[in-house]
Image (cartoon, rainbow, N blue to C red; front, side):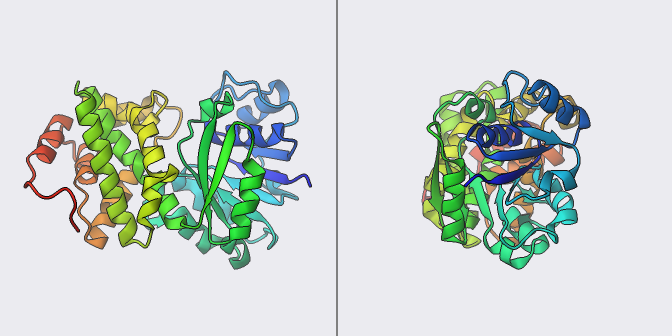
Length: 336
């Protein structure tokens, strides 16, 4: 049976997911904040700002009216930047039918509350809808999915049935979806890897090589798992697609916005200038703030996260941050 899908957020990832579902034959309406983006998708079947080189499905509809986008929808896919999800969905959440399948594809932690997107949805959605919410994450550059490069991701939900519904909805011959019951781990993996990608980018910008990047990826994963398990996640999740998989992609791939921000920081540019040049959001910047505060709250040592935070928000030179990491007190590789 054809689903009626509202995709909220017409950035590169929201547009890609909407296009994927539309090409599968689902009835998809994409909500764009910018009216000119919605008009271009309707009239020319292209997103000229966020995905300019990809022809979009002629059947994909678009609107800048949130009420119009969600009218009659049986599935709502939330792909707004993490810091805006609560505000955007709050106005429509109470009116969602209890059978609506909500799929979150935003990767981040709300800085004002330190809530994951699952906790945000628990706050604003009707309880029966929130209990069935699914969370899509994993190594997936939007452009490569839009170009139909083989990709594997994970979907987590507290409801096995909802996870399987989401899996079936998004599964194609180039987009493979695995289910995972660990909502907390899948969400934290998708959010925290962006912080480590900033660090990896800084190392690249400083001119360091593969040794440094491998060290940051490996020790970054240890930090992610340390915080995740303290918050109730399964450590195995961090060895999977939403953990190591997404971490490798974001720390090494040329399409990684967070890595690009890190490279420019490593070369000495100021954060305000970097962000002023960007059309799309680098989620790792605000997630660095949230991860730093979460680590302090939970009493978890996260030295890479701490140094990224200092570079971003305390103007510490990236080279000094690397030196501080290298000169920490020696210790065993595995410790609690």
